[in-house]
Image 1 (cartoon, rainbow, N blue to C red):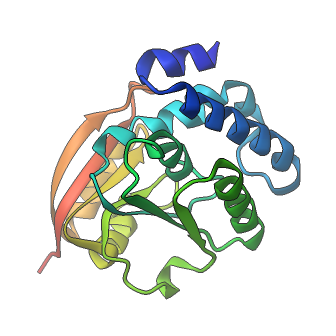
Image 2: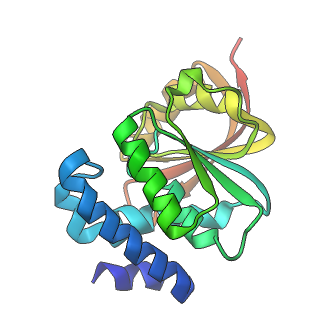
Length: 206
């Protein structure tokens, strides 16, 4: 059972499981109307989406803004917000989602799960600089583009976390043609061919 695998990898409270149960029910209810996730992944949602997102929670700071770009169905931000709700009250989440229907869904989840989060229903290019401590984006764009967003919206000491699939090494090489940055490559616990890039100290290449 995928929920068992989630709990085996991530030690979370009963309250967190209850919040994620509610989240799963909301996705199941809304997905036929607005296509939040591929319907083929719903049966394995606890691994494909919750565990894949939740593996980033351990990198959360003690305080500050966690900015999530192209949030879609809320991954990874709302899974992490659910996990940190009781332990990191000083971490707030800002989700950027230009699709107004998905933004309504995200606000519904935030309200019903009582999360410390808000939604900006705008294109990423139009939002003001966010000065985030952490930035994330899952299945949004190329690493080169994502690093460009991070350069604008991270604070000086901030870190961006970008989960990437089997072509992550190629994306890293392409991004380095445009940007200088420090990077740590973290193995994904849900896919042996995937990785998470932790990126900071970003500067445009001369």
